[in-house]
Image: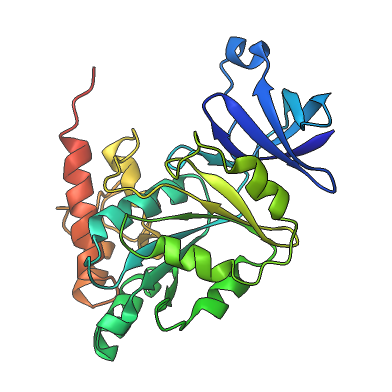
Length: 292
């Protein structure tokens, strides 16, 4: 039978099979031999060893449409990254790094700023404009005041969404708010997963509606820019794309060259200065990275 891995921990993979429930499975040795690691979100084929106790083996991983490294999940339709609007103040460098990771995988991103009840409206508008002008979908919410949560549910509906963000931004609170009215058969999932060895340090898929999955992931406090050439970085800033080919020099890095269309757009207010400063920071980081 076929199903979807909704959690993996300590060598066990928990596979959700429609109309059957959750099976606790071990991966067969062939995966180690082929250096293939099952991921949360994988569509898999299993062989049932014990139907009563819902135990089995993973025997096949179907081809993935995408694969993320951090967080380690597969086959997602979109990502939603959550930051606090305040307390803690958003780390824009960290957010930009996450966006680059998703751009490289061609995964659409929703940026969600929670705790907007702590800011004045003009400050909230500034957060929105900062990334909306870069081409991203941005939502500003307050879970504490239950403001914007319904709209988030609508954005998730019918999709597999990986949800990530630093610790302390209200990700768990949003997860709980979204799950309040779940009508699906989650009892079996909870029973199978609620064991002592399970912790929140691992990604897991949560069913919130028909064909709708919320991939909850551990909080992060740092992200490394993936290995790539510094000249490649500009490809992952969507606000630069409309200016490609308009610079005086072919292969312009948009850093120091005269006649740069991106820098001209920056001077004209068409590109956000904070985003551009983040680009320069990452460019210098890649430039200084040693190669062995």
